[in-house]
Image (cartoon, rainbow, N blue to C red; front, side, top):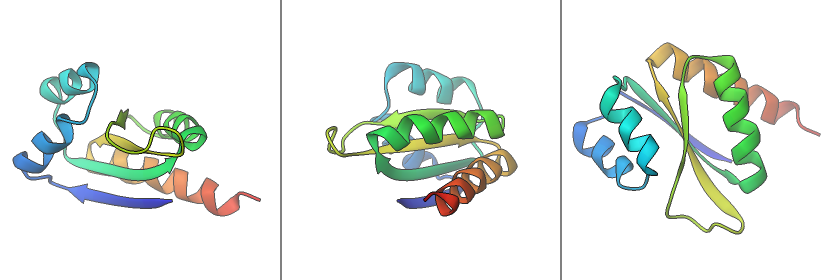
Length: 100
C-alpha cells in the first residue's frame, strides 16, 4: 500500500484531485473545508475495508479516486480536518501492520 498525507493542499492540487472524483465527492469538497488529504493506492477489497475503517475512526469523508486500474489497484482519498485525517490514516496503518 502506497500512502501519503497532504496538509494544507494547494487549491490547484485539490482541483486536480476533484477531476478524478465522482460527482458526490466534488460536491462534498465544494461544500466543506479540506485541511488535509490522505491518499492511498490499494486493492479493490482494501478500498472498501479501509474506507469503512477511516469513516468509523474519525470525522472524515472517504471517496474513491478514478483513473487507476479498476481490476487490481485503485485509490482512496480521505479528506477533512488535519487531526481527523491523521487519525483515520493511522488507524488504517495500524490495521495494515497487524494483518496476517
